[in-house]
Length: 263
Image 1 (cartoon, rainbow, N blue to C red):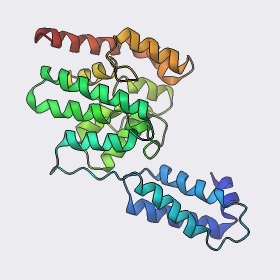
Image 2 (image 1 turned 180 degrees about the vertical axis):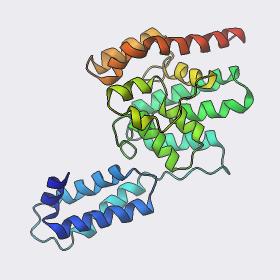
Image 3 (image 1 turned 180 degrees about the horizontal axis):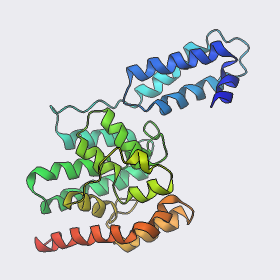
């Protein structure tokens, strides 16, 4: 974005001021991706592009960006708090205000995960429920960087010190590998291992049996809804041609575990 920066900043001195401010804010709030901070700073500078007096522009930009950062008061994870409680609070901060329908879906997925966790050993249950609360935070503007929400969410969580297994489950949830491949992001998604087992299957099951409004739906109805809402050119829809069978198999395996315990 060099040309844009030059236009916004009116020369080398302004560009250096942008870089200085970005660096300062990233040090203070490392949980936010560099690209996110860069975009917020650049947008605020652009608002003053035609200002006749520019001496106070850096101060005004800094105040505006700091206010936006404060409005997203996500705190790093600590083992001193319950993982599921932290996950729920973080998801609510990031989604409830900006993306209310995504928050409804998330609440539905997490509620389903609490029920489905009965098929897992006790030590695995909090991992599933926490991943369910966090699986879609990559859609939130403070988190979104690459446009692949599963990857952006996982990286954000990793910077906050969330257990690596939860980060990896978020990264690969619901067939994200195929979407990453179609989007040219497969190499970046590979930063996170893709575990294959009951917890992964259960997360996929919960996501793919919950509507955008948080209601239980069948797998086929959920896939049809995604296709209708996103359209044929969306990478998520195109990915279904690659991994619909894999998704269906994960759902079937979890459904069988639920059947065995009478759920």
